[in-house]
Length: 262
Image (cartoon, rainbow, N blue to C red; front, side, top):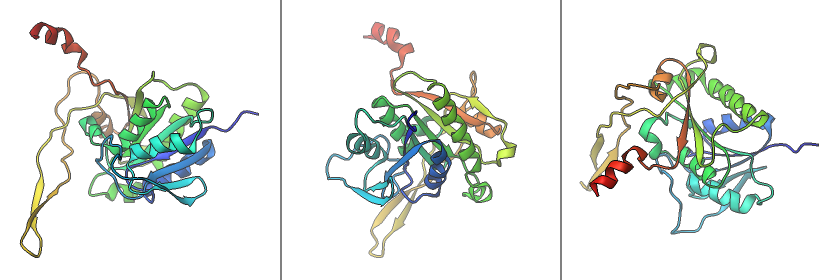
């Protein structure tokens, strides 16, 4: 008898995130799901490992753990080290469903994307999935995670029934448009867009008059694109955006000119 597929799930919004719980609900019919997620929100923590303090698994329920003050990268790293053996590793790692977009250069900040990065570094196929929202989250309240659940099931089934579409050290970055499932126009293969980055940090004062700063939410504005469709354009047009992401950040087109400059 063929063994059930093993799926490792994590996120960066914390173990009690509605997006994470929706993901687990969608994936359970597809295989044996193990969840290891941060004990608190770790948004924008990037691909960071905790090296200056100890970490511990806290059992939440069957095959469900939170990692005390751990990052998404910690969750994947320690799960593969302590919860799985080399002979019994996960068949895939899914990170999400993130509450908010992870598009363009923003994935360099993203803990959601970082968990997928760690998985493919360890030789395991991975998908990072994020739910884009608008109107301060009203679209999530209106539509929930139904389209995200439907989309991740389609992608994982396609992988389990066939093969992972990318070579080693590359992962799929998926963004879900803020629409109802029946409004979705399908999947679109995209490149990462180029975001317009502004600066927004609010200044406040504590009761003793000491000044402090609060970094605000970034604007969801994008530079005009020429060439392949971008993740932002796909979302704007009602498609599920699927971007292949590589960990090799070398600018290969500039190697020859750099050599000449040197």
